[in-house]
Image 1 (cartoon, rainbow, N blue to C red):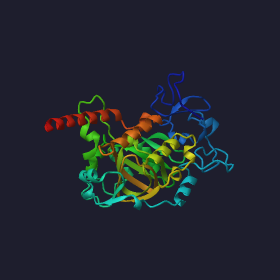
Image 2 (spheres, rainbow, N blue to C red):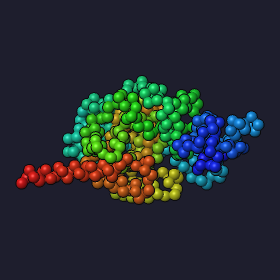
Image 3 (cartoon, helix red, strand yellow):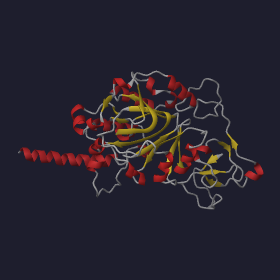
Image 4 (cartoon, rainbow, N blue to C red):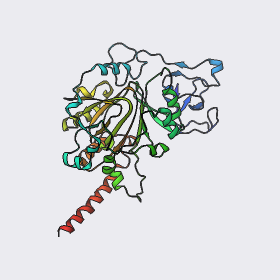
Length: 396
């Protein structure tokens, strides 16, 4: 089985006899060599990775069903590798999840600041600093508005639309693929899920669901985009403040720093998440960059390379504010829906720039970087210059 990589010579493809489309997943039949849109032949992109020899609807009656790959192990992203006992466990696999849950970690109680929603103000952060994670058990006063805990995955489809194309992660392979939201919802409600798929990048600011969510007041007040992005900008305004995350049990996202060193607000509507938190010290950031650029990154648990990796269990109804640069991994310990968003701000500018420069050195694809980071930085600099000039004139 081969997947489409470039345009073939024939002008029309598939049972629908349409031209090749780079934006749609296609699969090649190993018998007739024609290409087919996955959506036309009911083959999801993530499912195609499990097919060894693909037979299209035209060839199926003669040659029989497609042949699936044989599973030889449960600890490697490529589960067809022979299991000789010498290959290390890779992040996200079933064996990795079992080992992760058996590990012991220092409690995040050592570093997490627990606060009431009404106390999380700009004045507090400007006075005390925003250097350690904050957790809020009582939303009152936080300015955060969300759907009720009864809000379901089907409700998300209702407000966002089933045709919305989303990015999902095949957790056991740590591989991205695209599918329509309705297909993810169908997968979610299966009695037995054939694999673990994680949805963490559904930004819904441009959908009807946006009306149901109000970002925490602190994130709105501090956000560079909200404060400084000009209406007449030649660039489209970045939308990174409203994400819906729908993870099934045993979903895992490996250690990372949020794009552009953004700070994060995060609320578990129902279910539970486990955060593994590492402070962005100079030493830890250097270790992280080295680990991120290593060839065997997926075989090394980064939490073991640093002096302390803290475990923070985030239960239903809890809000987390994660500061700039914190290195973290996330395990979905049970089916979970969470809402969150990212924001740049004035309190940790130096760390934000360090994270951005690290992304450049690591050659992070644009898809995984803060949209127009340099543009918003210039807008902020222009505003600060104007403010400083005003202060100077008043002091004369």
